[in-house]
Length: 420
Image (cartoon, rainbow, N blue to C red; front, side, top):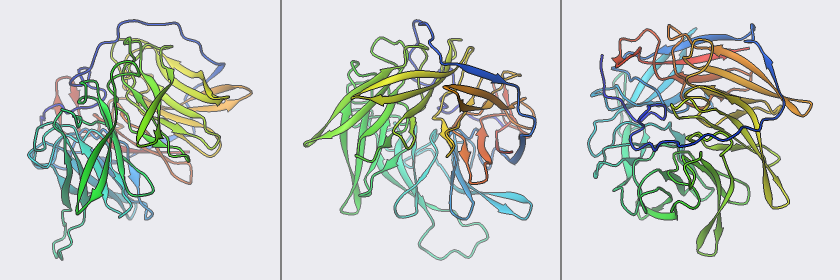
């Protein structure tokens, strides 16, 4: 089944992707290489087929009952994407399509995953469609009306329609909530044309948008990534490119009076690669991120930012050469290990799952799985999800046993699990 290419962060065009112009020297910390871990086993939990969605781009989220939720860029009723739930059933798993986007006012092509809001509903963004054609912020939740059917679709509500003007346009990253129930996100376009950070606040039964920061080029441009909060209420994110197109930048937005101020923590110029993924913070306030979502063969990798006396120290934990390296936000475990996916590297160049373990001031690199573009899938796009037993979960854009085909890509993608 063929479907239009959606706005994957690994699509070599990425709609409005800007070119990376130069490569800078790499300064890396000590890295020990370990072969693929033989004890790791990958299981495919679901093969997408097209009607149930295909090309699952965003990261998964899990509820307390162990069900997984996510989105697909395409597929569904009219190939405009879906929101799905994956539930355990005996020794297997059952996928339920909660909502199929219609490609009209409801939005289309959800490149980000979904997150749980304070009310237990799922919230996310679509890259296109909506009232003005430039994407939406949406909510999906079970219908309040009784449903006696076997499969009961959820109800979608659009919270905001982007115009690609002063309010932003074409969002790609996840949204995040503050403790008061306000929603935050970034768009790579709109504002002065270089992207912005926005807030949506519930108001009189609707939602009101406020722009917190417009990017002008001096503090990075085109923010694709999701945002995170620290305990003080500051926001952190990344931009796709820096002011000089020499890789992305990590920035902090801090509330100041009635507005916000921006601080660039460090340009990711060591790799000169575009940055699509965000950052994650550990218990000590260190930030971890990944850079490498271009297709120009420039080095990408995983980095750490450590706060020190009001400034930040930048360290490269792992570098990879070749196209489409680690692109989305890394995942941390309680022991300080860092997990990431890389979309175009690995033994077969169809992507891999990797682990970085701190050791004596350096990092031990372990290749957990190399995708083959067969039944195990190909091109893992997003962050991995880690459960309490050390199992990892994620998706691939393509591969698997589904019948989807577009250009040279085959397969509709999979949901996978890696067990120790």
